Image (cartoon, rainbow, N blue to C red):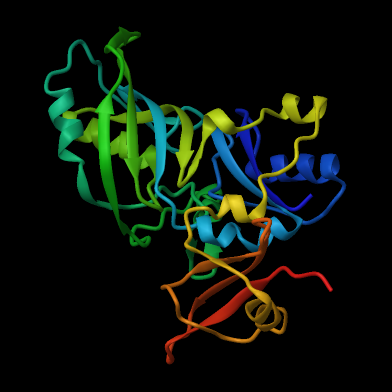
Length: 289
């Protein structure tokens, strides 16, 4: 049981809650995840099981796609519906919504919300927020929105406007903040009402399992070599196998990172570029002696 497991995280559960459930089901403590989802969010969570924990670092920089529902007409302390309302403005009609969404394409300078796990002076921002402290100079970041579009009609209800949108962006995008900023460009307070991650790198929600699925039937994780199929592959002959087994450097046949595979497409190792020489150096070796 070594590999990558795709789970459709339910609402109201932390990413770590899911890890703990999978640990019990797979009878191992070696379970980790990449790409944390807020408790109120749902969707694709990538888990590494046993040796799979060693390769989840290769998914940390992945681009992701989210389906979000925005509520325009009020903002909250957490920028989602779980927070306390701090500003309101009645919405009766909206104009230029699609143009505003289009304006977010490209480079986007974003300030993470106070209720986030980003560290400031060695402490998580949400820890300050729970103490009622707002960090005004919290670290902002540049992300890139590759695509964004509205995917529903606009619903007007209880002095608010709601619509769904898809956003495809780079690592580090906070959709809660994006929804707030969309509202601001439209001239209203806003917050994120629902959030569902549907894609991360090469993985898609359609290939994931619900927790009920896992409890009914324990699936075999995606093999290590298959999970890293987006990396170039080197097929190991006897010489390469022996070098890999001993963690020796390899000639840089292709640019790393690369998979080293045996004749059955099992992952033997991951190698990456040597910083100073035209060689590949071992990052992880999976050969069991």
